[in-house]
Image (cartoon, rainbow, N blue to C red; front, side, top):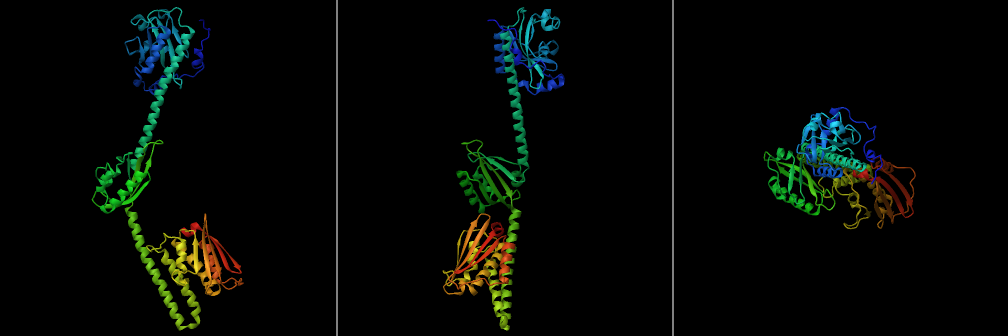
Length: 508
């Protein structure tokens, strides 16, 4: 088979104008980045050199790297030595070319005629070296074939192209080695950063495997507890207060079995023997789909927070008690005044009714009450309208619809608004008749809550004309404190009032 004069091997290598690193220190830094020690006698490189020897018919084939003082034979066959001095290296010359360097008879080449590797064993006569160039342009060494006898004809194009392809294979192996090292280094750096973060947390941090065995605790465990970390869920018993243990343990078992996030509060035994309230949280995390989940958790000291909340609740109870007494005192004083001055009886009656309505609203939202601020607007309205029931089970103001959370801050304006509506209805509307009643429908409409007050069975109603104090009170409460609007319709069958209030405002 006859080959063309121009070998495709030249197109596989970098073009002639490629920029090579001229600075040897920089070149050596690049060479070191491959960490070549681990590639000595590498099976893949050995296979490449074995094939290179067969391809060219040479007894010696080597992958060489040229270091600062020596030429290292990384992998190959035909030589018993692992290195030679750099000053006699053929590959030191070959690697500085961008194509195969071929020496057909070293004794006739002025560069090598007096070289120790030519004049003494192994008495090199023929040498062909395919340069190994990194992607940075750093000459690293060569894939070379050697013979102790000259070859006047040299290599044919097919062999040249084959060595170029094998040289690329060597570089891919070296590059893979470097990429692996860099990836491992990045992983190690990330793990070290994560370790420092976890160790620096002010909480106890832990992890457990898919079987529930705890395999990691950060240093904060020993700093806090002063003892060996638990290995299983049962081992936590000695560290958790006896009154809290069973509930915390049962909840962990339930969450672990179902794969749900875990959360519990309990008292943890500290290094000095005392107990402190902790918040324990944990989540299951699976690294890959369909793999068992590992668990990661934290234990956070909330003792001061718990104590502050207990003190706040105590203060709130005391304040609630004083407010309740204040309502009673004001109502008592007003009633006494009315008895002495009958002409103000109507005003005092209206005032005391309003104060009682505010008292009921306050009672509903006070801390610790059976229907406290953890309840909703529905419950607050039923409490406000309780005085209008004929019997214990027959409410004349019938509340229905959605359940919406209500806060203590919104209880007063809501009480004022609906007390005003109920009072007016009792004077002029549906509640002034024996058969009249009111429906109040609560509708959750996203960011807003609609409250539709509709009177039934009362006398005909009409707009009164000038706006009174009660209307201005409703206006201020709805727009100013509840972030909403209101609209009245004087329908023949009874007054209809549509209120739109901010859900955030009444839950705040």
